[in-house]
Image (cartoon, rainbow, N blue to C red; front, side, top):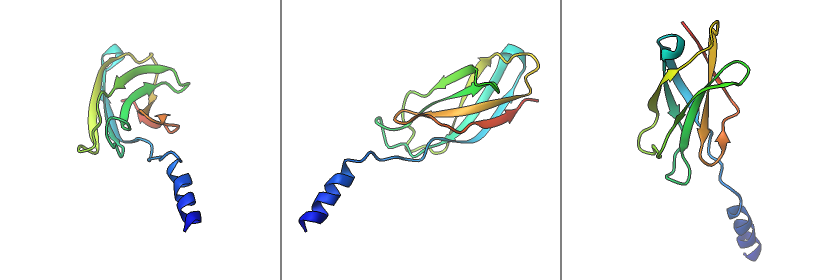
Length: 117
């Protein structure tokens, strides 16, 4: 009994890892420095301590072109869509990438490609 309780205490000290924020949809419109991006994220937000708190638009080389901060959890609104306007895209760019961020775990390793029209 004591060994089981000790094991439970050890496990309870481990951080809980939720799935990283997932980009489930992304679209863009406009051109030049007037691009608007709409991104839909899914994440198991649990409240103010752990939620998807942003996403960004990146060039192929990782250069950040625009960042959308998310200021509160969306635990009852999943998935959810937010937009960012006024993103300047370098001339000749045919594809960008969307990367999501979690308040607890930071920027997601995965990037979602988005071809520009």
